[in-house]
Length: 130
Image 1 (tube, rainbow, N blue to C red):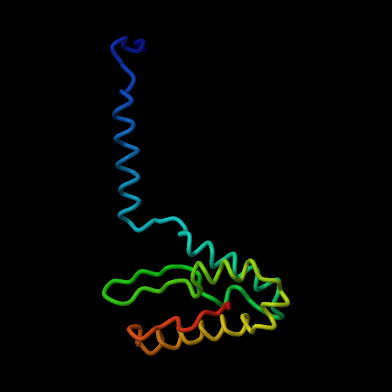
Image 2: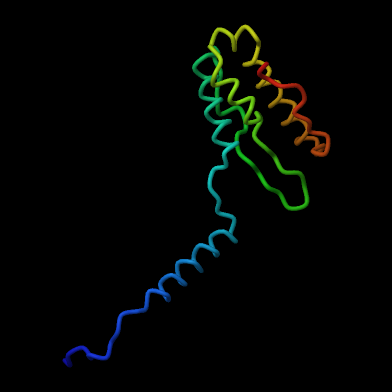
């Protein structure tokens, strides 16, 4: 066995940085992404509705962006301002104002539009949280 050559050098930091950058770009090009602010807002609002609304199942509403090739993209069922309103409202106010039902009705309308391939006509309509 021969001892390691003294000419072996560690890789320069620039090469390591280049490898990390290449890995990051590759992952981004493959479609990996984090959670957007509106998605997080929607998920927090859904958890608030679960606390306040009888039998509300937060998994029944869509809080994620879904990108498609050549079709319409899906967006979270509630906007960021609606999410703020939901999180800041009392449970009593949410139930009395019918927010629980309006969120579910909006989700059903969106699901129906996508089931019929009428994605061009999807409109969030009136605010779910007054």
